[in-house]
Length: 409
Image 1 (spheres, one colour):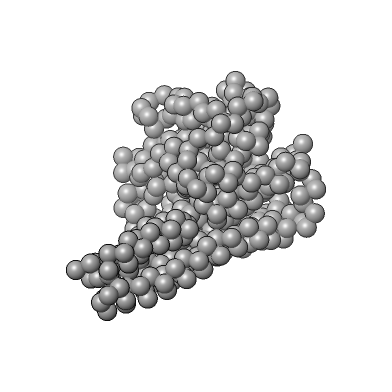
Image 2 (cartoon, rainbow, N blue to C red):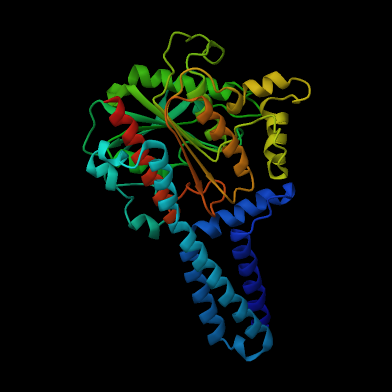
């Protein structure tokens, strides 16, 4: 029985390792379970490798290798270890990939324009050992500040500031993901928020109204209400209301891109049309950029079905213009801020081609730089917790934002 149990666990581990490298991106119903499994397995290969070593040692001591099921289990486990080592090596490539994207867009000598601390800064090594660590001794968190009336906790935000204090510091606005119907300001982008606060930035992470109760553009209106709060109140926390960048992942990536593309649009500023909602930089990660799904990727069917039923609450065939107006891909016009678009090659929820199409159109129109980092082996939501890949991408975002701030200065 011990040998059979070892075999079952080894088989499960091998399947998860295989999924981390070869996710099923052409079968819509497998997209979400593949994302959940690959998300944890591909981002924390070292932790899983250590766990498998300990488990294998225990089964070996219990005599599991004395029978063929146990011997087969050990063979599968060894292959899984090789796959996990491959995943770890892939995660390290995120650094060169992101740096190459920045040099291509900003120039090979872009780092000379930013201070040495920002150019060399990396998240603390201890975060790699504790992926879910959400605090930093150099950062102060101001919780649950109301930025608009009504809607209870959905109109609250958190502010991350340097422990040493800040004065007229650049500001980063973070918009969480979750498919427009779930998610919370303390669940996502914590590694990035802590990193930027350590660099001296003031970071704002918001909640916003969620579907199905909310209908788009309620979500975007809330993001602009948060911008209004920043313009009026961020100086109280040491921030500079005249320099605000925006970021977000997944649904938050969609909203961040829309914020960057719709500055001053009165449709999304009811009752506060006079507020300046322009941003100085935009960093969307694994965002949804086309609500019409004209690219037709099977892996995107789940997301776009959700958008149709719960977010816009209509069908694209019934009102194609409304779907286009809600899609960053079709809102690229006028003066745009610098963009740094980031997407994983192994994303099973939002196909990487969507990001490629968005970047290509941005570059054909924008006068400001458009950087694009395609992260090999990364699944959806890869940077929610600390990992080797997250550390490299977060550091690159820090350099990009520091460069945009240096240009403004």
